[in-house]
Image (cartoon, rainbow over all chains, first blue to last red; front, side, top):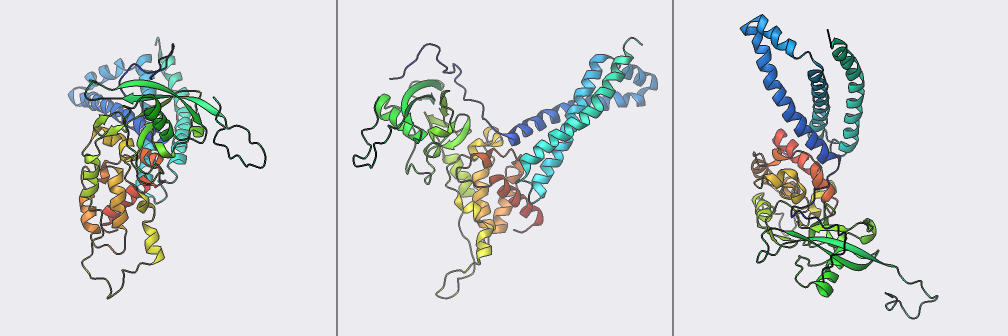
Length: 137
Length: 255
């Protein structure tokens, strides 16, 4: 008979468990999230850059509204997303086109993470210093 | 509980009793006659380290709840009937040993994902086999074999597609694919693996037909290289590698 001891770990939700994929699946999930995020950025970016055709003053006004710490942190997240998407994109191209790509996909994933960390270490401190030294000016 | 009754009586030295463990299985059940949606139910079973999840399911079905429904045929990893999601990963119940799982925690068992759930651990496999049929998984040749002889193939030519001959059509790969979960029209890894088996067969002459079938919006280009299929395959087929080879063959225009 089914037993239901106290403190049972039986999930209440009828939905299934989350599929426990490995590096390949999570890199795909991250690639999709960063891809959609970059798409929405580009949408706004095309609009604000188009303002320069309307009037230089309007363009400057829009760009000035970006000069605050919240947008500065957003820019850090944007660069983080683009750097991951770019390096992982190269990994995916290699998986599809390089004959040994599928064999070394896991190694390549960790290389992508490594390159991402190095790039962000170079970018984030410099950028955040700029952003926060601007505060109050 | 003593479990030494089966030990051979004429052993040279008295063997230590084999240790049994209480294992908790949490199974996702669904009875279409009663339930509106699936529900989780847990069972405690006594198991040996060398037992498999299939043995646990048998014990539950035979000793605790006869209504538990699952498929199994050969029970030795050849027929491909008992693919299911064990602790969140697609595995064959008959090839998953208790000793390879962390039994201090409950073991979650549920049906494979992406195919219509029929009852408990059974899904409707028709869409899966429909995709399999569509890639024409049989040898096609317009030329007659040499008179009174079989079609000869070199060892190297045979080795070219050896990996994809191992498929047992258990659907572990196809139902581990995130693309297949949301897009049931996608051929899925298993169909592509079986197309690969004939595309790269030197005796076959219909490779181009199969490449045309797979050069489709719902064909190989749907593959997002998540490698879930390669991880799930109970036969160790390098599924994503095979899909990449078919992609490259389509781009080259020949196998």
